[in-house]
Length: 428
Image: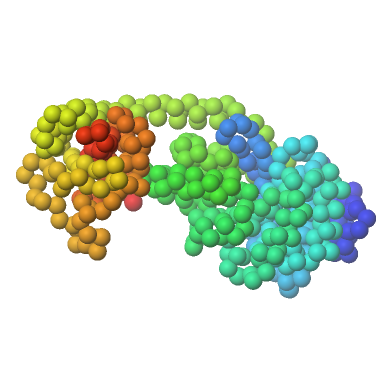
């Protein structure tokens, strides 16, 4: 059975459609001595606990029926026009296989060569013909996600016009492999992708380092603020799935949820597996909270005691118990403008603070104004409530710390009592 094309399709699409043959319930394409086939890998949503889309992956067989890398197929094509035609053929093949199985829901993720993306998007007649062909199959453009790699943005002067043209079709854009190579957020702001696919290398590094995992969570948060959904690909183990859920990605893709399946869409639901990951994460968080409380509660109690004594004792006496605790770097008091009221208070026997030579251009921390720091702003927002920061580099000690802070009334105005506590940095 041959594939059909709608009226108005260009000559190239009409020719490509004739190379599609339906066999064994799915479509394949013949391109010279090569046979092209579709495999689909599910993309799951953690919150929805099911597959919400499928990435189409090309599989190529040679004349002997041996599977070969798709790159080998494209490399033997003699010209850019031939590569463009082959790229269009792959998308036509995937769309035909997808629509007969997906029903009325789910995204189809389609990879597209960067140069083909720009060239094809600027050929308005060909672009319109492609849209009509996809729609004629019963697949609305808002269910198509085109995946573009970052390198095209620096290589193609016409990239932004190509993006604008493609956007008019109604499809979604995904920026692929973000985090690999020289990724930067400037590219996010240029393309405004609906979906950002994080490269597996970020996941691998984060699994080996709690510090990098925290950074990854902040990256996900920033991408959300940029207006993108975040997809983490290459999730292959239960621990990686736990980390993906913990850093708050929206979508996941990988062997732990579903491998690419030949010609069919594969699993649609993974609610039991995802529920198990939610349960494991809840258990880990509960254990982490207990360990965290065991570590931090004594410092919180000492800070509250110092807060109560400030009304009747000099600062160094009020903070004596706090300063004697192991791991305390320094205590200090800020006025309601974020300036130091007095010199920082040091633990017994500690020499007066000197700036680390590497940070000498910044001057002494006590000369600075800290009004924009989270520990200061949160304390003023909730007077009397002890606040705690994320780990960061303390300029008092030039090493990682967390800061506990609390706002207290002194002579009719609020002051913020703060203490920096050592926070052992994990391996990079």
